[in-house]
Image 1 (cartoon, rainbow over the protein chains, first blue to last red):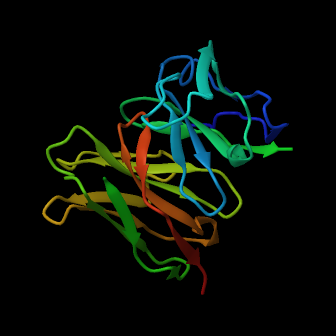
Image 2 (image 1 turned 45 degrees about the vertical axis):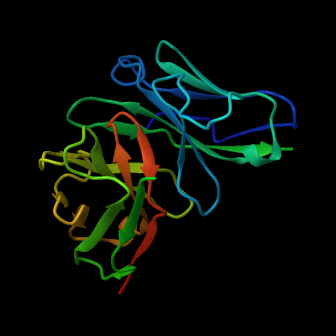
Length: 111
Length: 118
């Protein structure tokens, strides 16, 4: 399976909104409403931020939102804060045999 | 609160087998609808899903690693394990264990760095 495609980097100023895209195919992102997003700070384990395209786990700020159109999913972070600076990874369910594929990751810089 | 902790050697010689164990606390591996998996991250690079196991022993593998990987579960110890054979420097990575739905991974261990070097 091929990795999903994400921009290498995005940036924004505090208070602004940014969107990170995650492009797949009709066999992964386009075929299932099972896209997840993870936040990873340096030296830390990834943290689930969004699951099933647009759902937030308990405790995740509503500044984080997800959406999907066709073969591309998106993560939007509104009201950017310094603590949002991290790497973000998307993933998609593939099948009942080979479960998950990740995107290459996007480094978010808060200016 | 569910917690996962990876353990195993931090240094493995080329051509040998990497072996890691994940101990789960604060919840039971058996009798749940969750899967348990391994993910790795080479230094400075992205995440790669390796494998999942269900508590009854059903296994699921990344096709690119399938020929070298074995994942197993020991419900009596509330642990699951990873073996990766014939390792090379390209297998140097932080290895994470995680609880899998399997479409999302919601609880992660802290990760353990495994270096392949002679």
